[in-house]
Image (spheres, helix red, strand yellow):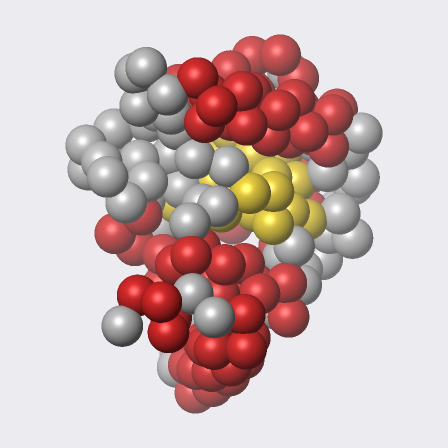
Length: 165
């Protein structure tokens, strides 16, 4: 089953299905936005920002997508795993292209180098005035605990962080 799901054609179909589901959900649900005024200065100017969503509340991102679409420069951090591939494809269709990265386990130097390269790419993106959307707790958790990557990006760029959900 894993081999089938990692097939590029299957990944493309899954990415399209997920994008279609997200688009349908976004358009057929009623969304209420509270306290958007605090993020308005970032939305109305091309200044850098980092938006954080807890991994367990990713569907809430749908309701806020319309708000972030006011910005021309958006990217998301997405896992380089096979699961992340179709998620990245769906998000790209929705206007949120991905920077592919994942936190590295201790002792995995190849993954650590890839994560560092992605963090550098994200830092350059944000310094250039972009908005970066991150799930700081990731699928492995711990749940609702911010991993150091998003904080390092904010520290090195001086960009404000907006925790949403």
